[in-house]
Image (cartoon, rainbow, N blue to C red; front, top):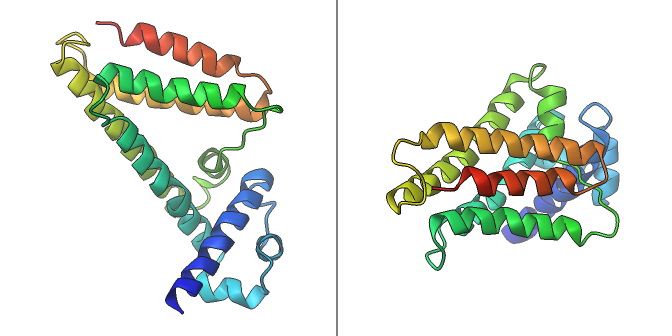
Length: 196
């Protein structure tokens, strides 16, 4: 019974987050979330205290697995630290190039632009996720520095923050555009940034 309960919660999170990503926080009501999940409205309130609670749980639901994959990719012992970073973003570029119709919607970006100031709890969770991501990258950059792939005087914390912020900018460009050029530019510049 517990796994059924978790499965239904996950279904609501997955379907509802997809709607909220496309329509925005304000443009999505509980009714749209339950319709997307194919559940009665009462089921929503069994799992979530409010729409804000739903958004907070959806952030964790979507980004904790993504952070785990990012950490795994940037810890791959088969590649050098520099190669891990370039391979990760190179694979993302390949993924977007293979899409017939480039359409990208970033849940964390949508929520942060729309709700960070209005609902501080959402802003804090968005910031915590972005900080986790930058820290994963910083650790890999520090390994690259130890391996001689980056200058010894490189500020890895600052570099990780710069790369993470640049990537968020790329995701914003993808949301409003329909070309992979922003990712291609990012990957090309990243290769130059990570030269020893």
